[in-house]
Image (cartoon, rainbow, N blue to C red; front, side, top):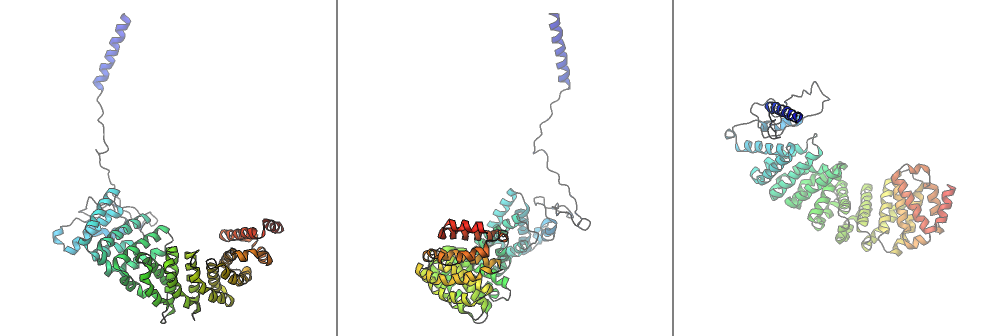
Length: 460
């Protein structure tokens, strides 16, 4: 009994001593403290290899704007006047708009998701208040910045799309400036950039109209630089997809028939080729009109024009497959004649066109012209041009898929010549060429029997 009373008294004394020393620690919330921003000045002269970092707004600025996000070193010159707190009553209406717009753009570009969403909504609502001139003067230099990251470009493209939608026809005076910035995206290596470029040009075409788009791109149609003409053709194909091919047909007819310069004819043919690639089977209702524009150019005096006319026919045939044979049948004869007399890259374009057209025309017509193409193709088996090899193999398959030709494969030396020219180990290095060789061998096995192919494999 005494032992139990002693233990109870000892426990009481210990608990009293603990209670006298104990003070509960106050619970802290993440909202109790604000994150501290350490302002460090980056000296790019001393550290040229240093990675660009965000610079706090209070560096070198006495009256800073607290709600603005940080600015990258390369963008400081552009956003500097927007970072300073000023008395807006002393500024003109134009200056006030520019500063307010720059602050919104900075929040959209470098801000948090919540800040970006709010600023984007404000910019969209105030689009007409700012006006097209102020908006594009500030946004286009940002889009052209070489330090622009992929995510930032995506955000700015979204901004431009919203502005174009809001301004509608008011965007017309700035169409040329927008195209100068946006059309290079159509040739970008990044797929997302190409899609974004097409999206802006499509919206711009709907807002500005066809006449404005033609007037803006007119100087580039007959540019001596092929890269500029190719980009212009891609832009026109996007316009055709947005507005409709029938609206563009008179323009294409005039450009492809231009006698002033073969550069313009090249742009027109390239445009038709890009329309076929971009729109696919949607060209079928307008196939006869497009073929009628391209057909006379197969006999053009300029060699480059005949080449691109053949490529345009090939693209139209591929887009309309398996239909369009009645319309494309008329192109076979000049294409076959071109295959017989041409060499090199010109021959490659004509062979490609012949193969695509043969795959869509009637079987009897395909058989009639198919054997003539096969003679030319077999002759080119020995070529050293890798691109020509791929075209030749594809055309052989297209010809052999014609039932009449496929039945008579064994009567000719097509398989023998094929294995002699392509069944080599070095052809396995190029994956695309290797794939073409395998597919052709597989088709030959279906036409001539697997036993023949196995025997050839053992021999080689």
